[in-house]
Amino acid sequence: MKKIPAHLKKNPRYQGVITLQKIKKGSYSNLLLAQVIEKSQFKTEDSHLFTELVYGTLMHELTLEYQLSPFLKKPEKLPPNIYMLLKTAFYQLFFLDRIPDHAVLNESVNLAKEMENAPMGKLVNGVLRQALRKGLLGYEQLTGADRLEKEFSFPKPLTEFLTPQLGFDNVFKLAKSILEKSKISLRVETHKISREKAQMLLEQEGIETEFSKVSPQGLVGKKGFVPSSRLFQEGLMTIQDESSMLVAPILASGLLDNGDVLDACAAPGGKTTHLASLISGHVTALDLHEHKVNLIKENAARLELSDKITALSGDARKLKEMFPQKLFSGILVDAPCSGLGLMRRKPDIKYQKNLQDFLKLPEIQLEILESAAKVLKVGGIIVYSTCTITKTENEDVVEKFLQKHPEFVLEKIVLDETSIVKNPNLTLTILPQDYLTDGFFISRLRKTR
Image (cartoon, rainbow, N blue to C red; front, side, top):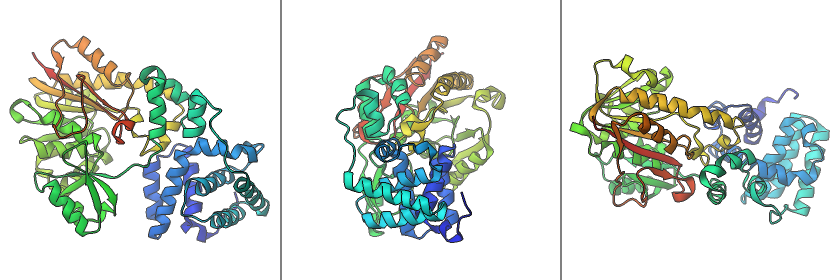
């Protein structure tokens, strides 16, 4: 690729192509987008376009490749940035309504010339004009994993991995569901302000929300930029997914002597601060990485909960070494996991190629549970949760732990009666398609002796 003119550094389409290339090489989408937006100093509308192009193209990438296939004999022979540019152009032409076709063509052709050369500009122009004349391919003739891949951009290896655990019907619904755009959700600090008043004050700032049907502390954003609001700045609310808001109350409910609690895998601190707002005791928050511990401290300070939270760096698999004399009334193990429940918000997760690596995670998850069991009081509670949807990381881990630890029993999860979430089983699994939230798993284990 030739030297890029300086003015392109503030071009959202150019930055979109470059960012997508970096994500394909392993960068995390959410972290990279924040860095690019801050460095590029986009105008507001350009920031929105950049974010839309990156997440939209990522979300539909396999579909875009399928739709491009009639117009490209050997896409692998193209410069990678030109192939990615064509994907972003197809996304704008066929998945977005607000950008005129001529604007997409002009911008894409000019960008191809500046990134590569005039012949590449001609190629991009020819491909896009042919596509506009001929339209999109259909999906009716496709079946099974092939249809999920081409219509919903859900990789075949992931379908094959999840189908034995969830059933094909659930995987089909999942693949379709995660294409719906995620919504920002807010946890109101209801010990300080009612949800009704918070909603009213946000409305006065031009921010529209609706009540969450999943959590009685939640609001779901409809319009406006929440982090700029006075309520957010003053620590009266925080950003947290609706399903994630269920975890802390499940631990806090019926907690032994309402005493001290450990959050063993705490960063960035959403559940930590939620716990601190619900219990009279103290929360010790632990994370393996020092820079993530700082995130916990920042969240605690913004929500004015620093006096109830101690954040430390440490390995959750070695709790007895860290707390030789300490026994906790409750422990949250929100374990490291494959994160497959987050695919709506982080679409790059579904393209992870090393699915076999997921099979190693239960070993780590069990180690952390084993470690937590050693520093829990008799009568105390462990809540084991993940943001994934696989049985191997969820029910199977709990079952293996209980087999080794007959002193623990699985307790029925009781949810707030206002929640739309119903739980007929001892454990709770929320799939992304159930309530259009993150996928989540929650279990509650009590130490009886």
